[in-house]
Length: 128
Image (cartoon, rainbow, N blue to C red; front, top):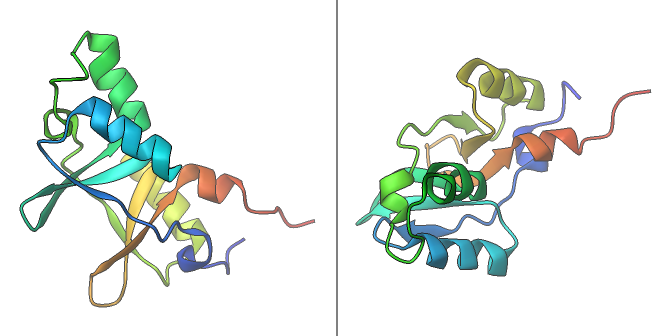
């Protein structure tokens, strides 16, 4: 597993939604795209990340109305990036150290090219 790069396992399709998108709209986008996260934007700038887990735990479980609460209100603002050339072991270590389940993946110019999740890493075959 150590030699597998993040680029080999990451999800390349990144969905961006404006921070004023409501939770129900974001959940529908996630369902329609078969994804578990969206990048939250403020104008042309990345402003955070929201996952399906965030919607459930930070909003629904707290009684926030999904038709009026925005993703900007619950977004994780600290976005952790890893370069696509990093190994999956390095990505797993970063997730463990920072207590996150997803990392944004960038190229050598720090442009976003994908997202890698803990489940992406868990699906890797183990060495015999």
